[in-house]
Image 1: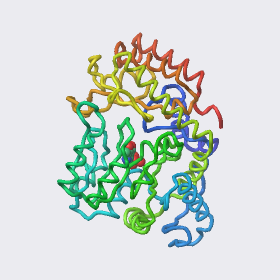
Image 2: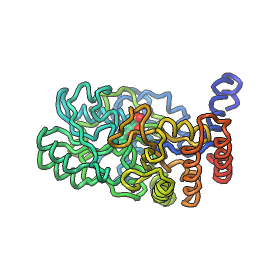
Image 3: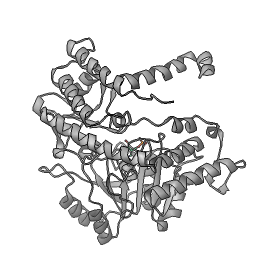
Image 4: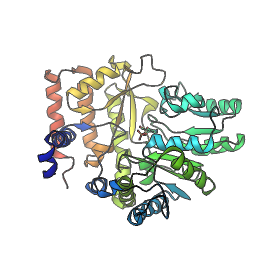
Length: 416
Ligand code: PLP
């Protein structure tokens, strides 16, 4: 670090101030986490230099003996962790892993059935602004008005009516468990591929805190940087019958050279996830999310679906008369980092939104437990309902003092 500091003080300064930012606030973005120093060490290594197009033992470049070892370890650990027939650890991100599924199973113009973005889906699930909605015909299901959970009757009706090639389950703002058996049965009935985008919850599966989609789905894509706590990247696991097709779709169809430093970091992360410590962590993430969701609900910040089974909850702010955008700004001013989010049937535009999404991966990594979740709910409620976007406002200062107290007791990156 000393060499970087003297050569490029501006970037060195950003590295330090970002660490200060992480340490100084409460990080409640549901899709973020704090990777271990071991994962970060692999990321910042000379493996970043290596070109290794192809797969272990079948490369298009010389000099791959060492990176082959790293990728083989990553593949073997990933397969063991998820009890999967096959793993591809090369996708650069969740979106790249998803591209590979379209590439493997669909032709332009083919139909996919997926969850709508405003109901909890993801951009790559057929929205018009993404390749997935421009090149494929996406039909979208949503949630039931009463339960605010997936509308399974609608999924079935749309599947039978549109006969999609692929049925997709998963998304970015789904607080409840997904009925994978239902989707599998439906896909079999109409002869579709069943794909699960487990980006958000795969860490909970790795930690055995929630049921796995792997036995049910043809393919499961995921990111490695959310609850899983690995490097910023993606991966997929699939049934053996689809292995060759998906490998070809990742490389050479969608990507060039794999990022070997990131693959090594994924290997480290998969090893971490197989430990009892990580399994305990995953269970605490869920427990904390449930307590936080309930405690916010008691303050009038209603959790959609009545709570959560996972690491995140989605809250409807209409009862307290605040928009998602204002809640995000007020929280930010007080040192609480969360995001505005559309809620099902949201009357607001997406950039304003009526909700917030909160997640517990980071604060649980810091060692916080259920008592601290109740404290966090108090702080959020105060910032959202009485606070201001001005960091110098009295309420912002008061809440920030509470945040500072919490992060001093549970520091981020206190080791390494
Ligand atoms: N799929 C889901 C469900 C996600 O939530 C995300 C990211 O938030 C992605 C895919 C895309 O991942 P990435 O940002 O790594 O491309």
